[in-house]
Image (cartoon, rainbow, N blue to C red; front, side, top):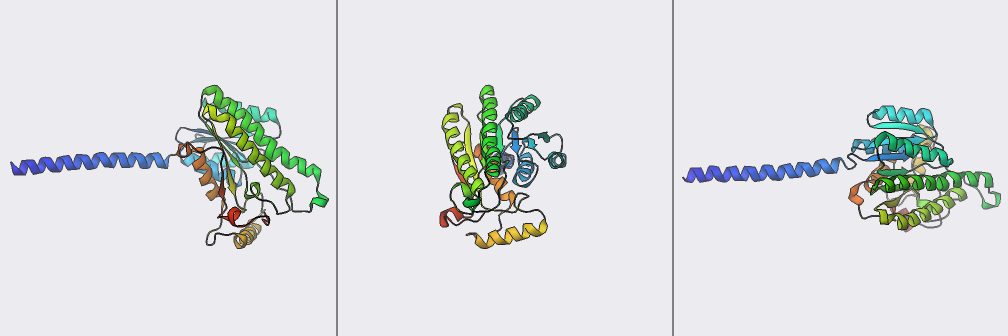
Length: 290
């Protein structure tokens, strides 16, 4: 009888162990697939942060529509990911009709829209306010602020219509929190975008839609460097100026934070501008040279 009780005890122990193990593995699977079944639009998805986000999001179970004006690059990213998980849609974010059509394409193809990662942006050269090129200034505001506003508008409409408790994430910048750098158009646009995030958050919360920003420090992307040599120079320059030493910010780091904000792990996070700057915006002010 004692042997029978021992066998029974071991069987119960094994069952409990296996039960706990299944739960553990299920939780791991959930964590590893943080966007499973989600439909995502990524603007500026043909290169840099957007392309990294497209790869990362699809690795986590999402189906992604890459939106960009760079058709060849965007198609290449989509093909590299696979047609079952990614598609490309050419769109100029400054044209509202094209923005609306990009959202319609996504909803018609996939039946819904869960996440918008509004990442498209342009950068102006450093220069004095005394010599500000207002045509270039207008172009930067059109892409970085108006383009984001158009996508937030039409993405939110699609989410509200389907009753989707969605997530909208916008790429801002450390420049959205501090000044300096002599990039007047870019800095003004990112401050404007942050204001848009906060007002949209206040309105869209009643629909269960979250709106957040991800604010990176300077990094080497096609926006800041044109080849491997200039990319190395950019990395060295900003690593020297950065606060956090021993790591160089790259597009993957920013995409990982965007993934958190896009996923249900941030289900009660809204109206925030999550810095990915190694503490720069907390420790330096008025002197950023991005």
